[in-house]
Amino acid sequence: MITEKVYIETQLETLTTFGVRLDTGEQVFIPSKIVKKHNILEEQTRELVILPNAHSSDSTPWRAVGVSISDTCETPRDVDPTPRVQLAKLEDRVMDYFSEDEDKQYPHSAPALADALGVDGLHMQQTLSHMHNAGEMAKAQVFAKGTQDKASVVLWAPDILWFSA
Image (tube, rainbow, N blue to C red):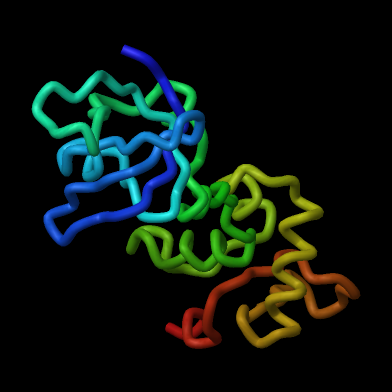
């Protein structure tokens, strides 16, 4: 058994495939089982494990029995790498929080939302303000006394209808 680089020349409809060793130019038979398992395509250069082909004429002296470990570790050129998982934007997480459970479908304060979503209060306040300015979040300011300059509590909800009884 040896490992050699093989240029994939021809692939039949049955996925039986033939390639050429790059070092000697000799033909290599690649069974369809290996082609399917390792996604081998025409015009690729792959590193294959080969043996002398006892079942062939002199025109195909080699038979592939597998793909080398170094070849399987490489990302094939025709496959896009898996994208990185990205944490959902805080705006999306806020909206999901309001919609995921009936017990949470009431107006919340910014500190309560920050605690529930595990973010700092300032970041939550800024996000809610941006959402409010964009028309994505309704805001209610509650004053305990008519003489107050600043609201006692500010509540947030996805829609103004959440504030009516």
